[in-house]
Image 1: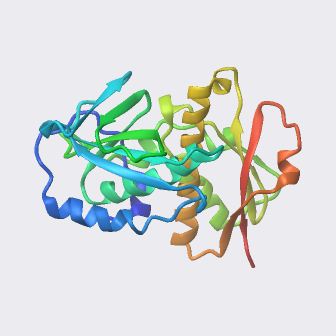
Image 2: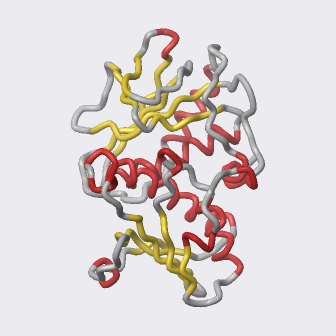
Image 3: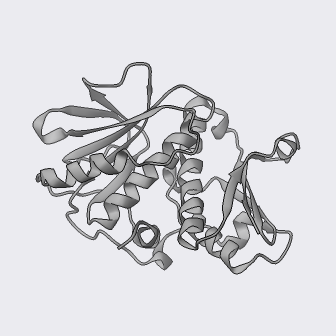
Length: 256
């Protein structure tokens, strides 16, 4: 299974076998972490993985899942830090899924570890390990909004654009909030984040930004899978527009 294929079969695993993962798996993971591609190259990041069975760290907070291992993403402080964390972490989650390791984003949890990187803030925690039950699912069983509910189609999109939207729609999000909205043209997608009263709170806004980063990686990975010359760009003129209930995030443009 490839990371792209994992988009369509991954599910959140909430029950784990409390057993060790071989050291070779983590050595390969360390090499993979060195090759991550950030959404914002200027924002520094670091991942920490700890074994909860060996008391290398613990978690606290709401909605925690008991797992043998946890992955923690840290970034430097920045207005785009949440999106950076989501974009990077989803790369790791899909990598692990493709290798038979279950994962679950811990939206309300914080990790307590001794080797937290100085000068960085913890953004997201992911439980991981071998699943006690089912690891994969059929994409049609994912509870997601219909594509017509999250997109405004200004033009008939090219086939590749439709496939990008399909992958974006399947992205996981905190409490399945699915905050993304899209304005779609033939060869470009403008991405917006849905606003509401809850999303204006600092904690929930950061989680929404993480969700948006996760979804943006689905878009980028799909474009790469389809060998598309596509770029993520920020268009200030769209950010200046007041679109009720939505905040502009960025756009994907297909080059010709």
